[in-house]
Length: 508
Image (cartoon, rainbow, N blue to C red; front, top):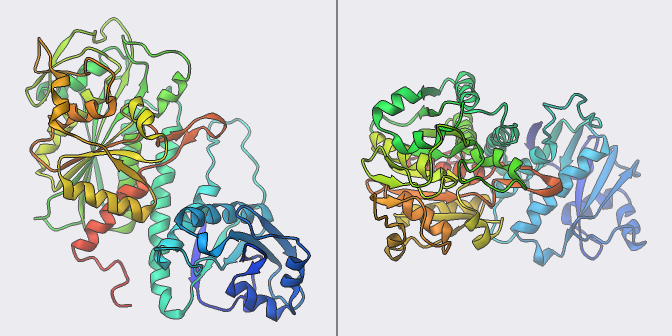
């Protein structure tokens, strides 16, 4: 999809489709009102007849309006003006994108970015439109013998901005929205691949292919023998039951100064999770292919960084394994030694994500990082606690947690912070090792998993995102969501601005 921004009056647009807003009840937005005057009041006459109420989710496609230069006009319901908040605007953008796709028009000019949204600026609105349009175009049919045959697709969208001085802001917002959408698409594509194809080795190949696409990325892969030599006993305990060897994938992005400490993203990459010897129930087990969505989001975020050319140093670490039962599989009761030297009694082999992450966190110490964020589909308990709307957030550093909350609000990719108090830590006590990998009860399961990880993150500022409820959708709409790429990309954008990057706007 090609995006552009311009500043111009709607009645002067020569385009296949013009998208204009209508408030509830039957009141044109200022741009639509201006267009209507040029058309002799045609739109207001339609609205008085009750053809469109202007409620959210409504739209009306019109052809051959008198006095109009455009071929089509799409009227989109915006709801009540005073109720147009960020959630409603995102829904409006998504509905407009879908409606435009259904028109058969190949290009469109959209007059939605100057709608007043509480607490949101032009930059945010344009990014939401871009991301919504790209989301509406997404489909995963790589493995179908007969591809979906879409109607003639929309190929170019021009987003109108209020004035010429807003063009630079708009163009940069389009660049950022497109880069984030590209990262989301990669993350979704990786997550949606079936586990017979998406193995740890295949995931490593995708990281190397991404590095081949963007020269600012460098990918390296540690094999099991190298991990054994390093002492990654916790990580390797998970892969023992599988015929697929584990990989530790590292992707470097180095566009900051040599003195700048890197931000490290650690993504859980369990390409399929049976639970191991602690076998999961069969119902819904197919969705355990999504247990590598943390890894996918790291690659998606690095793609966005590379496309935006952020002046930062970022490292992606992906411990990639398959968790299977087998003759060599780790058993409940086994004790392993992690890279940190701490020993772990494995009471449940289905609590495997924390085992691969703990060694990756210890490995991240080598980078002397500015901050480390791990992203993991870690616990069903997080879904019980928070549902499927926010990511669970834990951190040992309040400023880092606050920065992620700021980024979540800016990107509308929400988080909710949960406690990481020392009171919980004794629940991981073991009679036979330094700690157990699960607590003795199911209470606070997401918190206990984060407490386990925190024991391997004491030497740096660290945050943990539990994305078990947000990484994919179930039911009829089943598929990866691409989250939390918008959150992570926004966090890194904010760090780039802090480092002095003017992101193309300072001169304006």
